[in-house]
Amino acid sequence: MTSRPELLDYIVFFETEPLWVSPEGWYHGMRFEIQRGEDRVLATLAPDEGEFAVAWWQGERLRLRMNAVQLNRWEIETQEGRELLRVSPLEDRFKFCELQLRPHVRVEWAAEWS
Figure 1: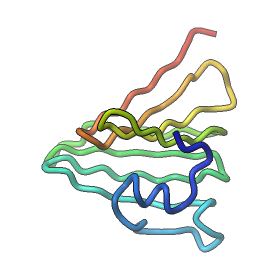
Figure 2: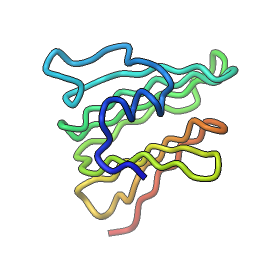
Figure 3: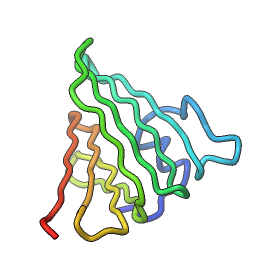
Figure 4: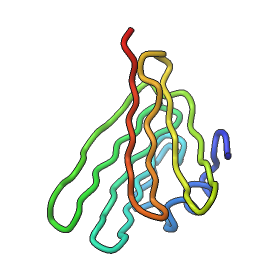
């Protein structure tokens, strides 16, 4: 598990260079786009700002669009052929959001009753 990933960690995770990087530096914002078969994922990350947004299409159909703010934990985890990006917030009620790209695209969001 990579805690507080660096730019190179994100490039390896997304297997591409960012489409866009904030003029203030990557830690203030970057955007990645990946294509896996008919799945296309657009992810915007701003670790210093605590923001994460993801959109996922299958073919022309939008399957998911979400964003989260006030995130303070960013981790990239690799195990048994799967790799995922996990973000967690300051607020305990929202537990985490995971974006998995390998071996297939998966998004998981978990929250608890307060």
